[in-house]
Image (tube, rainbow, N blue to C red; front, side, top):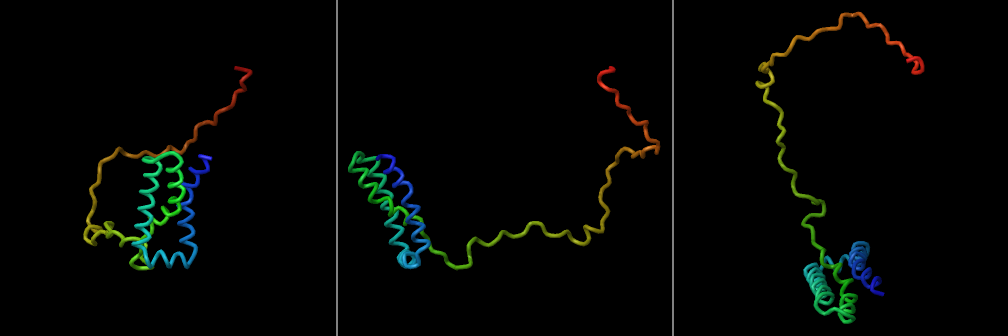
Length: 133
């Protein structure tokens, strides 16, 4: 029975959040009263934690089971603009080089002289069976 109580306390806030997200009337109600619903959610979380850790026993479990669904209201916020999900992108730091910098010759580092193959191929290696070695 304790396992069912723990699962109830852990999962019902998520189910409350899903219900508010997918139900237009519930979403409108939470959106219209977002301050009140967020306050109710955080107070429910405080009550749940008090019931579990301070009271304990059957009364604490009853308090936790009763307040757990309301904890799902604690994380709702409003957006200022429906299309504005993120902040403005940071300014670009990778500006193209100035035209004068492209025309200037770069610094050449000295390196050993490259040699080309002589054009002759070495004789192919022959395979020797392992038994004759």
